[in-house]
View (cartoon, helix red, strand yellow):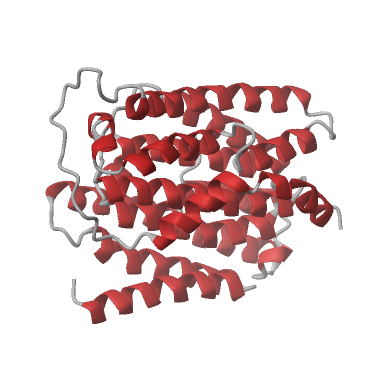
Amino acid sequence: MNPYILAALLFGLGLGTTVTFASSHWLLAWMGLEMNTLAIIPLMAQHHHPRAVEATTKYFLTQATAAAMILFASTTNAWLTGQWDIQQMSHPLPIAVVTLALALKIGLAPVHSWLPEVLQGLDLVTGLILSTWQKLAPFALLLQLQPANSAILIALGLASTLVGGWGGLNQTQLRKILAYSAIAHLGWMILILQFSPSLTLLTLLTYFVMTLSTFLVFKLNKSTNINMLATSWAQAPALTALTPLILLSLGGLPPLTGFMPKWLILQELAKPDLAPTATLAAMSALLSLYFYLRLTYAMTLTMSPNTLTGVTPWRLQHLQFSLPLALATATTLLLLPLAPAVVALLTL
């Protein structure tokens, strides 16, 4: 892609998210979301592969549906209450519709089925943008809407953690596994949204860092399925030693960074008498952990001298700039000791 066009599209992505962040009026927020969608569509379809075009079409249709629902809900709210302000939404009907529309935008269960299919059709860099940056603007709106619709948020959160765990169990494609991982993590964020918005932001940032390092590892290895991951030890032995730790951090195992948000969320959920919800969420985390362990097994326990089904690739000099990967990996593995400081900040 022409660098000037790429710069214009990335600027459009940033501008769309910033407009949504800065707006207090529903029409402006909707415009920001639309700019975001229109900027990422050429990035998704840039390879002209039938799968990429199909993924782009699916993404466009779901995002257009969600945007229409947001417009409908905000117009209905203005008609019923005379208010266009995001924080002045008081009627239960528009609140429910706009919550479901934003759930569709970010891919929460039960309106999640577009996300694995779309992510599977994209290259890893565009998939990374879709899994991280594209979640920011809808979350900014969800944070302003809460705490008005507690039952809907808890139902969406629980459904997402369970679907994210179950859906990834028998997948062999890494991008689909990462999509179900995203659904499960989003479920945790939505569960805690109304009780501790700052904890939702912490979980979102932690998820961004862990997802960044995972996507960068797969990009460096040029891996798109489990079999390709199994032969990656020949290309980057040191990275092969660190990747299982990154995956286990995504699964939320101590003493890695990914354990911190899950621990704090379960602690927070136990306070407002939501012990059954916390138990279900913790059980669903075990489902997610299973498919991370499966990837770990494929990557490290099928190494030489065991027999391999694939052909071992040559170890060639990597052209990829590795500093972002090094920083993201260090952050993914080593931030748990900061948990007391984070708790102190959250209680301010």
